[in-house]
Each structure stands twice: as structure tokens, then as C-alpha cells.
Length: 586
Image 1 (cartoon, one colour):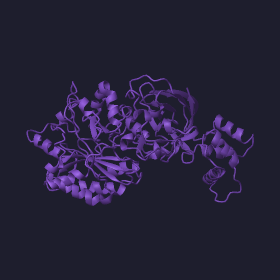
Image 2 (tube, helix red, strand yellow):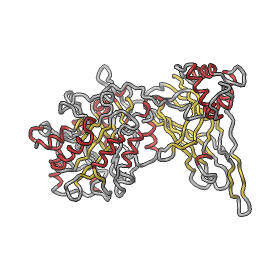
Image 3 (cartoon, helix red, strand yellow):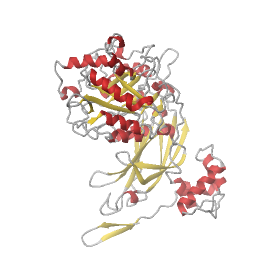
Image 4 (tube, one colour):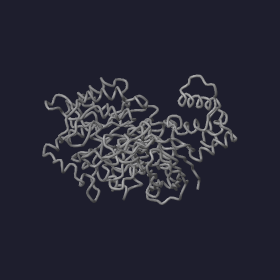
């Protein structure tokens, strides 16, 4: 492929995209496993896969299948006169993201523990198409999120303009509503399109009792037997993802709390500025108030009397029976909110800045709470542009539901998508054991502790290719081929976080870097490998050329093809890197 670049009004320069050959390590591996020959047999490939790639379970039949796939892809032939690979074939195999990906695509973790043992892929205001103030509400972003593997969908439900039906919208903003029934039907249709594990619908309820009854009817009629309704009102322990396969779970506050909250609102509705200011319910010092609602204007307290179903209208009790994961705020302050009740489990919600403050003074209490209960963290209200926050603070404190604006984009969302590539992309990732266990004296993991290095990860960036197929010749530079470089690093606990970068390779669509980096990891279980490719621009901001984020615990050792994604997390068709991963125990 040749690209034309305008040099001046008189003439253009033409550059041909030349394919880079295999890097030295690939040449050496081919030479070693073919005993210096020109063709690699299936048995020689099997040995390479076991000894270099760490694929211990590969059989000769598996290796033969790979050889057939490569030959078919490379040479477009159905019947093979040979069943061996040349050096080019071998390089093509290693550089194929389909045949040689950096992580597996199967669920491999124990899925039989209670829900509180897992990080769960969680959306925030899942119905918004764009910003938090004026974008349309729709079921389209909900469908997109479910297809990506998101397992927690949030719906804000309000009376419609005529007060006789229920809409989904971001209250007290200019967002255009969408009917609740449409959202429910789309959830039913797409809930299990990418994962068999349960979908949790968190409801922010702003309804009158008669509309709560209507919602109960809608939910029951839409989901039927898919709906998980526990036999007892208060669960002592959450069921497991395995038990809840193909089930829909409702999580919200019991109705009576909303009734008290709404009556409190009659005295005067807060302005949007008050609602979203940093001095929200948990934003003040000392931390003496707790809110489960993002509105921050709920003045009720959750007591055992409030949860007495006998004191409510039978119709409203039908709505309450739908709630499998009870949300609520106990009386008192933060310490009280984080108390673990041995007889029942619940969900608590904190804003991102409330979690930061809680982690400063009560970090181990937060972790102890999340060993049995569910903690949801949500973006602060001032993120009007649907931006996101650092997810690692939530994860290092055991928060299961770190809720993100999936319609946004940016580095924090890349980390979120990276974490949930784990475990086959099923939307549930088992928390590390150290977040779930206490020591002999009841002590728990403390993220502030400086831990010794547990293992080192060596990452070698060989080369990149595919940009000339994904981008126009002049996308990066009007006058010459691109000057690519790669940034590679770790996101994790503060002691592990670091970024490094390769040299810039000038005027080359298929750059070869052949550079190695070593990362020392103190908590590898929570570490994510960050990879970004940029195009150097001397006069302006460097151009973005692709990114990915991969869970370190899932990395397959050896030489791997790493596909790249665009800013919004959509996979680029062809752009990819050839990399090598090696773990060294310290």
C-alpha cells in the first residue's frame, strides 16, 4: 500500500508501507524449534507452545488445528499439501490477535461464592446517551452496555408528565425521558447476550405509592420467572453468581423510606447546584451523615420499624417483595453505616469523594464491610460531562460496584474495561483472597501498607502493525508517515503505579521498537497493564493511535498479539502490537 503526502503545491511524496519482518526473538524461536530447518511441524509448534508460551494443556491435535488455521488464513487454501509452517507463517500466527491473544476468553474463576466476593461491572445512569444535564435518555446505551458485559444497570424512575406512568430520566435536569417499560424490555432481550451471569437493576425511585405498584406489575410481567425474589425479606448471605445465572435482580430502598423522603421534599426542593455540590451528605467534616441516594436530600433513617412490611399497604408490599438486594442508610454516621449485621446483608452507596474520605479514616472498616455486604461507589454530581474517576480506590477497598458512566470515555474507563476483560469478560471478577479474609486477630488488608515486591513482570514491545488499514494515509501527518511510540505501564496500588515509554520510530507505519521494560509488583492481583500508542507531533499535541488495558493476573506468558482499541473502547480492526510477557518471582 502506498500513501501520498503533500510536500508543497508543486509535488507529493509517496511512501510505500513495507511489512516489517519477524523480530529477532521470533527468528530465534523458529530456528531453535525447527533445529535450524525451514518448516515447523505441528509437533515442533506444540513444544514451542508448551515451553515458551506456557500453554501446558496443548495436544498435538490442537497444534495441528492451529497449523491448518494459519495456512487457511495466509494462503486461502482448503486442502493442504503441507501441514507445516514457514517462518513467515509462524510470525503471522504469533501476530494474530484472533489466534494468539494476550488473555483467555473463558470463565475460569470459582463462581459459587456469594455476590459480595466479586467485583461487578457496574454502570451509572445507564440510560443517558451523553452528558448528565441535557442528553437524551434511551435504551440504546443500556443495550450497548449489556452487550459489552456490564452486569449492573441503573435506572432513575420518575412519574411522567401526566403522573399516570413511569419515565426514566435524570431528575431536575433537561434530559429527555424514555419510558421505563421500553428499558425493561430491552434489558430482558439483551441481558444475557454476552454473559449468563445475573443482571442487577438498581432503581433510584422517585415514585408515588400507586406508581410503585405499577412498576411492580411491569417488572413481574416483563421478567416473569427470570426475576429473582428471595423467600425471606432479609438475606443473611447473598446467593452466588452461579446460582443466579440468567436471573434479573432488583436492588433499591424499601418503599416506606421513599415515602418519608418524598414528604420531606415537599418542604422545598434543593437546587441542582446544592444537589451536586461537593458538600453533599458525606462531603462535610466531620463525616456524620450517610446517604444511599445520589440526590443527597433523603432525610429519613432506615430502622427495623421502617422495614416492617405489615405497616404498609398490601400493594406497596408487592413492590417491596421484588427487592432482592436492599439498599438503605442506617441511623448515625459513617462508623455506624459500616457495621456488619450478622443476620442480614445490604447495599450501601457512597459518592467517589465520600469513599476517598472514608478510606482515609476508616479504610479497614470499609474492607470488613465489603466482605459480606455490597458497596456501590458512584461519580460525584459535578461530573456533568459524564467523565469518570479512579476505580482503584474502590477496588482496593473491596467495593463490588464501582459505578461508571459507560457513555463517557477516557483513561479511567479504559481501566474499568480492562479489569472486566478478566474471567472471560463475564462481568464478575472474583476479589483477591486477601480482601475477603481476616488475620488471626481480625485484622484485614490495609491498602496504605507498603508491601514487599511479590513478583516482577517483564514486558517486551517488539513491533506494531495495522494502522495503515485503520486510518487514512494523512490521518497522523499530512506530510510523512507517522512517528509512533508506545507507552506501557501499571495501574494498581500506589506503589505499583508507573508509566514508561519506548523511543519514537520516525516515518514508519510498521514500527519496530524491540524494547523491554520491567515492572515490580507488590499487589499483582489488583494490577492492570496499561498500553497506549501515540504519534509524535513536534508542533502540536501528540496524536492518539490506540490503547488497551489488561489484567496482569490474566496475562498469558510468551509472545502475544495485543489488539488495540480506540478512545471509546471500540476495538480497532487491524491495529495491534506484538509483545512478550514474562513473570519473575521475587
